[in-house]
Image 1 (cartoon, rainbow, N blue to C red):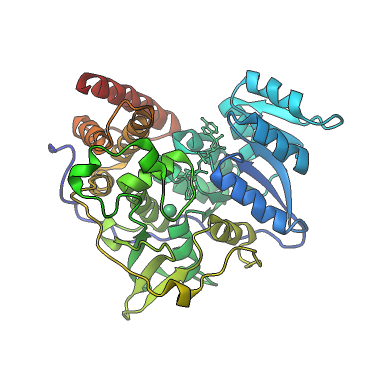
Image 2 (cartoon, rainbow, N blue to C red; image 1 turned 180 degrees about the horizontal axis):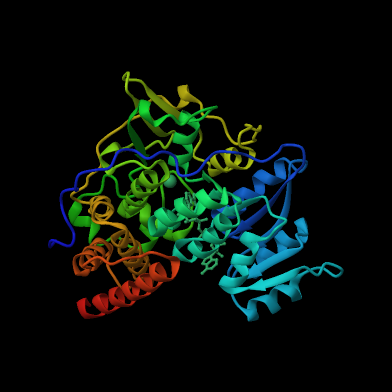
Length: 418
Ligand code: NAD
Ligand code: MG
């Protein structure tokens, strides 16, 4: 890489603390939820959590993109007064599927998602749209001062500083749904915490994905079906491919740094194939505080939806004796370059993480369509980072403008390469 994508990090700032204050909602009435990305893996899990505690949650809004059949089914069961979908056509299709006597407002497109996220009668926004499309509604929720159960890690990768700044003014509370960050939040939580002055480093665990033990020369030939077959987690297609390339862990290093205001040198990654230890915090007395649990996102989601209370949940229990052993190993960073690319983008500055994310989303989509080999994904991202001189990204428009340019350039790069 050239000078625009540095190998070494510049001098680091001191930890600046958790992204938002952790004030929470009054517990004297049910919480009103808006679920963005309701038809996806996280959205469905969030609705299952809410269904276990019908006295505590009211589903006030559901937003999906194109799967109107599932959205209609969810809406018919829960009867939220507001729904949102991607296009006018889908809105009509959705309305036709709803039961007689139930006529919710159906909002459309990015403006519709933003309206759902910022609606006055919503307390908690589950931000679970995949990719950069999740940024605008996440910002709308933060601007409106909501409690945001944040699954859409791409928001922090694209605009972590902006989110921190907006939350400071609005009073929004960010609670991390991503299992590693949720694990850290649980390990470090409690009244008065997280106290980062005690923390030497955070250790994010990674399953290693489906190709953890596959030799480097075979990675050139792996197919989308192989990449989508995650060994421990059931997830949407984009994050499954990110897990196979280790970009998911790269995005999560950025997410951790931006959530906790930490320099990149304080966030390590360790591969833990059983996905039972969900991450650890190493403290200044040598202690490691970890969170263990089943590989089921409902645990993390429930912690966010109930925060600061911990509600009972009908997930499977970890049987340590049956499991026998928990193992840990170093990530194969040379064979899976995305993790290092993410760290270098983080060091290089805020516009570089926008470039990283956009090139990754474009490359993953091409890989899934058969237009790029698996190892073309890190190559595309490296090319995009090296071509990027850095620029100011002061607001969401600047971020999305850069995102669109990088997606276009990445498609051109792949076309020329083919
Ligand atoms: P998914 O593909 O299963 O679901 C994505 C959801 O987003 C769907 O409801 C879809 O309709 C909606 N969507 C897609 N494009 C959209 C657009 N342009 N506008 C509006 N909505 C759109 O994805 P997922 O696995 O549920 O992941 C969602 C987010 O949560 C991602 O950011 C992912 O990184 C994060 N996350 C997921 C998991 C997991 O276990 N699945 C774990 C941690 C974090
Ligand atoms: Mg994760």
